[in-house]
Length: 286
Ligand SMILES: [Zn+2]
Image 1: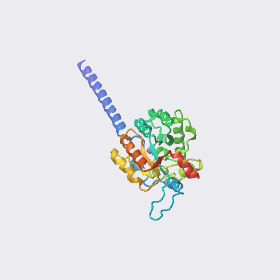
Image 2: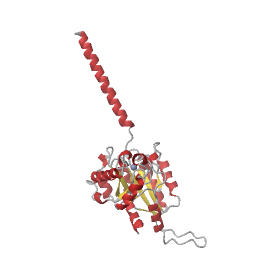
Image 3: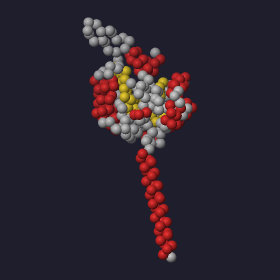
Image 4: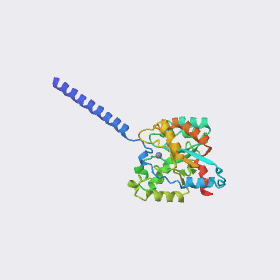
């Protein structure tokens, strides 16, 4: 009798231990598994800035050459604030700041498991005059860059996910490839020509893909401070007259939101006009 009770006790304790260890392992996996989204090491080092350079040239045709040492007449300078990987727990703060400052931005969105619950925020984003553009549904490089069909299927899934909140989801033509259009992270999944194929197909299908020429470097693992993010942006501007600024909107990029007012003030003080990336279209097609 006593032996049977002891056996039962041992069995119960073993089961309890297995349960606890299992739960711990599950939590560990959840914590250590990186969330889908841009990671600094995966971003292309040399983005395709053809669109920005072209827009810059068009922005300044009337710039008069400097005479007698006088400064050249400046053409309109334009800044395009862009946020990748949202919506997220940080989106509302970003929207509050943009509203307060009265400037528009473009959001290259995702609809992965970790951010699905924030998708209704896209309604407010649209209502406040910002542009919604496509980034990726899953943002899993392994899946989306396996082959072109997989990439387009992912984009279609993203459209379906955001459609309840974005009235013109079906006709969005602006995309940003995860990692950028010249990324190499895709090569190990889809071969070294995958981005070349995707870019050609994007053009055939009438898409405009847009990279960046100013980077906040806010997706870095070390979580740069607001001050570092601000300086990353300002230092990258140099003498550019068209700036497409890459920032991120995730629960890990609160510091980007903190830096945002100063970044906006800097562009205002330096005479930049704020636009959404759809304004690049006239530059491209003109
Ligand atoms: Zn991304």
